[in-house]
Length: 133
Image (tube, rainbow, N blue to C red; front, side, top):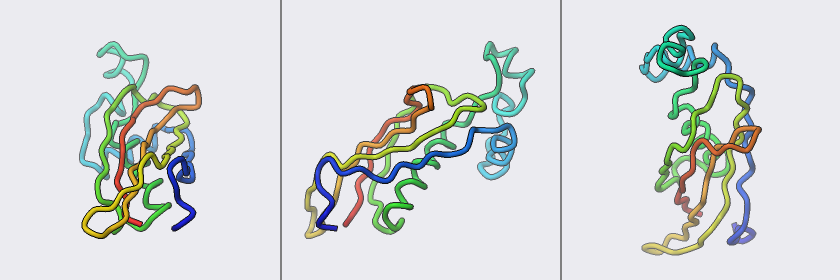
């Protein structure tokens, strides 16, 4: 892990376009059956152009990016803030960058800035994670 330094990038994770099928599967997996995520008529009545993804789906994608990079047992903290909606058909890319290397109780950690971004450049989630090396 000595090659990891401030500025190092976590390998990006780009997902297929968010589909209605993905949203329906996520409803079942998460237990979040809010119709705004799967019912186009309901979403339009609420003033939206169409259904949109659960924010936690993109957070799960960020978690997958992190655990593709380092084993889950090394993940110490993982926080996000929702900044925009992920629309149906959006392509999401998850990224991370090392912004700090520190040591706590004899364990070397990296602090990462992480983000989920659409193909048009809109960041839908931003946050940070602490990962042990």
